[in-house]
Length: 150
Image (cartoon, rainbow, N blue to C red; front, side, top):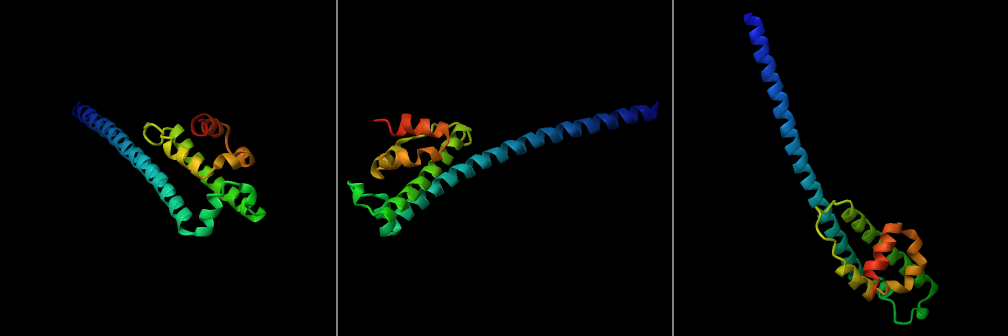
């Protein structure tokens, strides 16, 4: 009888320990998810900073991205270079868009103002028909409805 009572208390203690462990695990997972969101936001910021530095640091890169008003004046090599540079920028934008759609940024509104600025100043409209097929349908719809639209 005494050993049954002891076994019940030990079982109760073990069960409480398991429950406490599960609760602690839940707190740890929540903290880890918050850290992942912050890392994704920081990665997005770093991408934007690196792009800005990349564009402004080298004159020939700036000239390729900031094409002249008449892009027919660009050489074939410069047109290819510009398509690759703008294409890379758009892949970065697509990654940021996809992360925002998966709620990785913590449900905050996804601002398109910086993209509209880039769209206008980098004259992406000129090159969009060439590179459009490189991207996902959701991103294409986002660009055409929210960024490129007047």
